[in-house]
Length: 175
Image 1 (cartoon, rainbow, N blue to C red):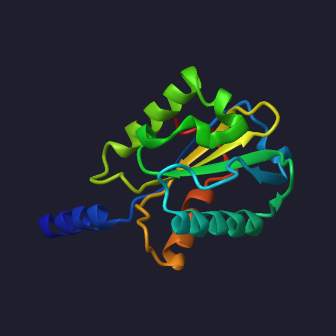
Image 2: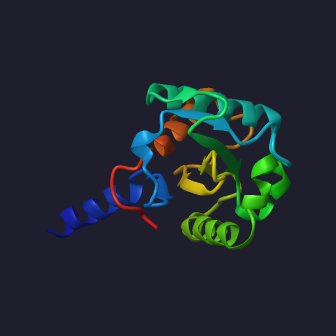
């Protein structure tokens, strides 16, 4: 019995981490069919090549889930890499006034709480969805593994797909 228990613990410890997501439970995600981008340029401090890799992967993954890019979309997408302390509100363009105060603090707290158990979160991908019309956050997801500069496109796509497998939400919010 003891060897079996040891093997089970080893297998559980070796299991790949899962993406995590939280969302606004009052949002009707079933009505959303189109999306646009929050960022008009590469966010401050983000590697431009990595930004392009992630953006292409998000476009591909959302299209695979049946969403169509449109201006304006039903929801808007943004993403960051690393801890929220390095996010600059002005990178959010016309969404910046809404990404302040209590909403930003609550989001930063959630992200930092989820990242607390990870040995390194300097390159953690967070994908965020916003209501295009109210500009308020409606969904946030974190990738299970970090994405570093010079990461192969296939790895980036896998991480993005892992996160977006949680969108749109299918049950009650995780956070």
